[in-house]
Image (cartoon, rainbow, N blue to C red; front, side):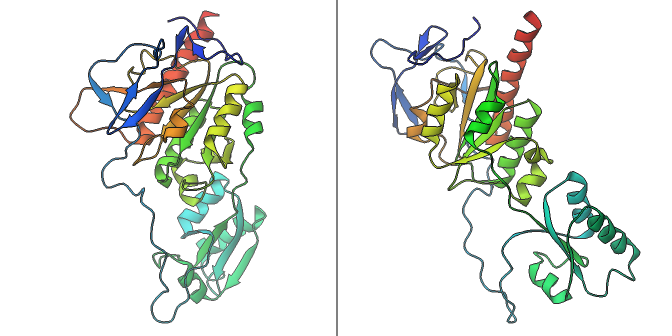
Length: 325
């Protein structure tokens, strides 16, 4: 496969092959515009799905929390981590901690807790002594062990930060089209950071964001990778195209598999939500699409697993290109 060039404004083909148009119709997309084809031919074998989660996932929106029984007030808003081991891990990973709440009268006699409180104070985390009842109200399962820490709200980067971080050569940006499951989101961020992506772009609404769950599932990668919230993904893709990126959509409706798709160079990789996949307006911004080949009987990989496979194919080609220079 010939090495792909950076996008040139006004040029709407990649690797000498144009992008077809389509409309969503039932479970398949109609393909083809007069005189144009998508990069690569129709793949063979079963279609690898890249946007659905494993059955039993938690991508559905949750109902509002009802007031607690016995006259207790609802849990305070904010991201809290409770329990001694979890709080110690949050400190070790470097999560941005806003404050620590310690049960009154428990830290002095408890040497283990006192040591943890001392480490938090040494790290500059404000420590507040509160009645045990307050920790009980905050706790999600009643096992706070006399301590909880609150994580500061995440400061999102701007799209221009990601464009700047991408430099001039090969670069990868992940664009998540309303991925709502926090576990999948964190796992994708972890994979993106490991392969050296320039950043992750997510919509401001109907999407998982950076919180306690994402910090944990990303293994701290969210602290080292620019993550951007944008009001409109289609507009963000136009900006990335202007910065020389080609836009690839990971979708079960693709004609070609990832082995034959031009997953290299400056690439903005779009993956869709667990239930609905990539939206129509965002698909229309894709220069080409690809899917994962599949031989087994299981319906598909979930979105985080599939995204990891696509990321590593980009990394493999990038490293091969560097070795040839």
